[in-house]
Image (tube, rainbow, N blue to C red; front, side):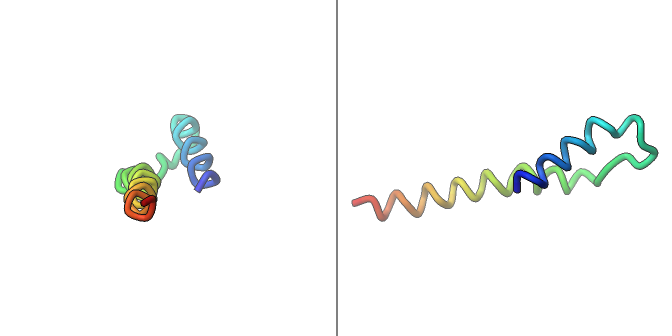
Length: 51
């Protein structure tokens, strides 16, 4: 996941110099939502198992 984030940031900063504008907007939504949902799922699962 960290590698995908690094590649996404690299593509964002170099979008002006490279002809290709980078990935489409749904890619960014998935890239941001995926870790957030993963952390939310871990917290929700651990809340019920803590007692």
